[in-house]
Image 1 (spheres, helix red, strand yellow):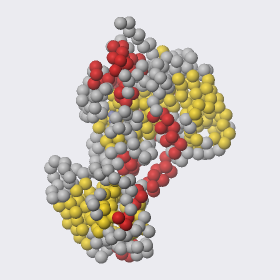
Image 2 (cartoon, rainbow, N blue to C red):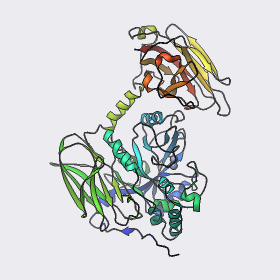
Image 3 (cartoon, helix red, strand yellow):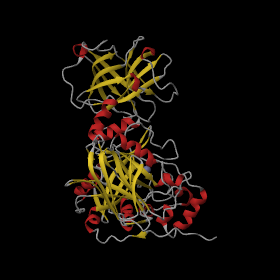
Image 4 (cartoon, rainbow, N blue to C red):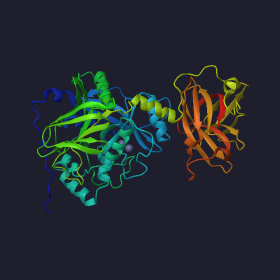
Length: 556
Ligand SMILES: [Zn+2]
Ligand SMILES: [Zn+2]
């Protein structure tokens, strides 16, 4: 059998690009080490990255955020950064630049997105196009970033013959062999929809495990499960994220980590399929008068000016400006100018290299957008919090008990609470005429069904929301639930700040609590109980603490 080898990556001429080349720093994101289901330690992984010509790596071992991340360090000349990949009910969510979480992160995707943000981290929807439903990101919550390309997902949807061909070629040209498996992922369209709502950073994930073995993502149909590849180095030679910094890396790990994370957060980063050609360099900016704003910038709506792209690209490659998912300008040259009047929406750049073999071809380069009129991340966050009824950040003072709630419609504050719990957990309830305080301890030992709840009975009341003022002795999450007479429950998770959280629990926001398959929404007058549940979703067995309900009221 004659084996057609994929061509070697094309080496591009970057003379004349010295300044940009010095500030464009390639790295790999989404890597598993022996700490979870990968096969190399950080020293081995850094060595592989050095051989592949990278400058930084971001490890994302599986976890719940409670392990303190390793401090940034240079190993083998590679800046090693430590993140975490969190499992949620709606798929995997990677968090970078996040300090240790005060409780295990998990539960609904919305809750984890909110927690990562509140903790100061940056969250990325992992493998959103995974063929496996359990892994796919299905949350309606707006992530901070999204993997527009995930190598592990990409080869799962290829036919076995393609995999075998790639497997044979792999031993001769690992990077290009992996690149033959790449198509244009549908996730790019999903990303285009996300950036219409709020700035969302697109990254490429190697999702590298360093070879064969059992992994959290299941080995069935994966290339590594089939023939024991790819190595870290092969993954690192296939795609990279290239952050554009204000100045070159300094060699100081802490300062460089801040610079790399800051560039990713603001979208000053593009991805390139290095197995096709490299090194990729892109200068993308909006020029208006003497102003020049680069990739990731969020500008006012109705701006007038010119989008200017300069890029190194392979012969025959096509450079395109994409507006809200549609190509609006193209060139086969190295520079593209596109005049905008009254600009709005998101513009990004894609470059297709001719040597791409996928159908349709994967773009060689995808940049992050320049936004016009988009809500900045801060605005989007505030809206998200409001929508999810999250706590206001400022502590509540002096509004406990009947005094505080009397003004609200239908106030019956405080509710007559009682305790519900599993037999292994313990709880005490202290009630005054001003508040109710629950002291609890979840049962020790194996994870089972440990839970403690404050419960109160409802009597065919009609309401659209419940206002609750709740505090606790430590940062925690409670699931506020409505239960019908037949035992079905609908709920939503809320963060409780030790300083106090004012919750507006909208009945329409409550979703079915697993495992029952049932109607998406509950009618308040059918509910017979209101519950505030502490369970193992965001706490470990044996966890103790307290919850204090200072006021509660129905909203009509
Ligand atoms: Zn994953
Ligand atoms: Zn992963």
